[in-house]
Image (cartoon, rainbow, N blue to C red):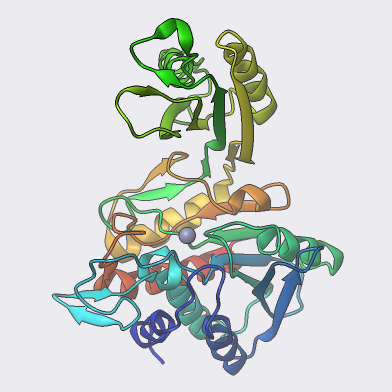
Length: 376
Ligand SMILES: [Zn+2]
């Protein structure tokens, strides 16, 4: 099965997070056919309310070099307004269209196709492929449980390629070496409802939230670690329990997100935000996604950059911007590098990739495997 057929079959699986719909079995069967040992695992939350299907596949027993690949087979919901069925692959004008082709069934298809060719020849090392089924919602039953299992069973790789879409405009122009941390903040305010014309009779819950958000938008974040883009706060939601223009609401909440460099960590940000919120008499709730991480491994970087160069001729830049990835859980166990398709159309309707990019990504991953395992 060529890379385009494999990706097309993956698109047909309606693996809207955390559902699987056969996507992981398809990958497992493909890898088993070229000699991988495959292990489909269901991880359950302690109360049994959440079950996530994951795949671990391995090839070889030599521990001289152990390369991992991390991916996810789940996709975000398609939403409305597609020109065709989001789960029916369509080839048009040189593109392959379908939900999840960029994020990240294309990356999985390209790596599996590359690896199928690579294992035909002898090499001194082993491969470990980790595919999770819930990356888009990120419950503990995906990557965290899978990594726990890998630790317990001695299956942590030495180095790991993450196949998430990382390219910006053309395939190969960007590799992620890390990402900023992310924290969500819910601001809550309670007041006293009243007629807008009688300020002495009400306590507006909305006004202090507006003042706080404006205050935080002007906050001067320090910027010392220039490997990352600067720390940035953005308001994302605002709710009140009122829809009449002459009524002042007694309940307001707002959501903020901070993407932060290694100049901060989640506990520092909690403290800063709590102190600032006190000035406005507001209560905060924090939902942490993880701290900033960065991995600067020379052998992974040079193997990937030269593979990209040989296949596409494109000059590559390194970045630690963008959204976070499951690399944040891996980085404490092994070296990581993140490289994949162009990310321009991810999570959009009519999600698409150039078919030529899929073919080139397969070639780049194959060259990367050859270089990785042949380097001293
Ligand atoms: Zn993804």
